[in-house]
Amino acid sequence: MQHKKKLYSTIPLVLLTVSILLATLPMGSGAGSITLTPTSQAQGSSVTVAGTGFAASQAVAIVIGTEITVTNESHPITNTVGTGPFTSFTNHGAIKPGSFYYHCVVSSDTNVVESDYYDDGDGTLTSSSEYALNPFVNYVTGAFGRSTTSAWDTYTVVYTCSYTYYQYNGTRTTANSAGAFSTNIAVPASAANGSIVVTAFDTTGTKGTATLDVIPEGFSLGMVVALSVAAVIVSIRFLRKQPKKTMLNPNNFSLFSFSLHVKSK
Image (cartoon, rainbow, N blue to C red; front, side, top):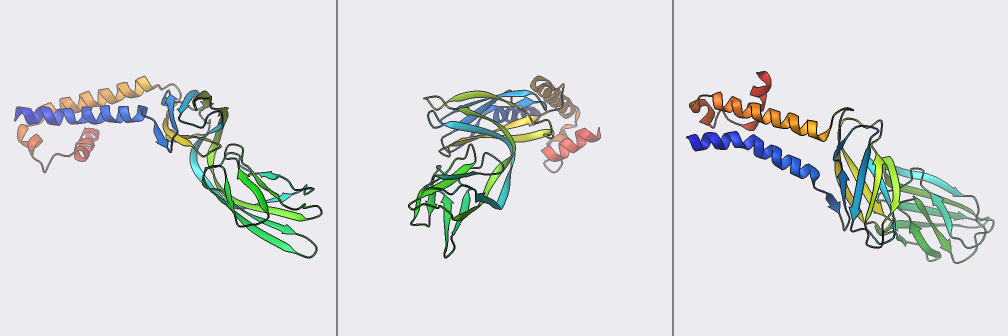
């Protein structure tokens, strides 16, 4: 019976330890991986983002927050002299790798030619046009476009694109020859308290993510951990005071009912 009592008392402490460890581990997508220092910070404060596994010597965008989808964003090409490349930029800057698509309409006095361009997820686009040359998208800058086999002089050209961008643009940096980087970002002043995702990706589509805990100004990670440890101590003391029959009754014991019981006290 004494062994079971110790086991129940240890459960909250184990869960707390695991959650703290998970908060400090990087989460990666593809080959990239990023870590944040610190992992908890207030609005307007600085966080260091360190990345590894990215493409060597390539530009990297660091963005923050939720994903937002844009559809049918129009981009008329104002200068159509020559064969290109004819480049435009998305209205929201850096975009999620693999999310981009655009439709191209080339109009003359006698003819209209339309074509589609699909994101391959690595900075290149697959085209339905036999006349398109080197279609591209730059995830970091939001640039996209193509060249053509024949001049577009006097033609009217419109790109219409759809893509996913992020709630906040953080910053841009460049990976070194080993595919690593370290730079600072500012926690957005309008970010709500709680968990928020930080995402880094390069021009080849390599991406990494990590979770940042946005905390009220004046708090620190040490204070958060201290409060959590204090809650564990209260939990253990509460369990020790409970009658053995009540504490060991499986119908009465669960982490959820225990949490509610502590709050009601």
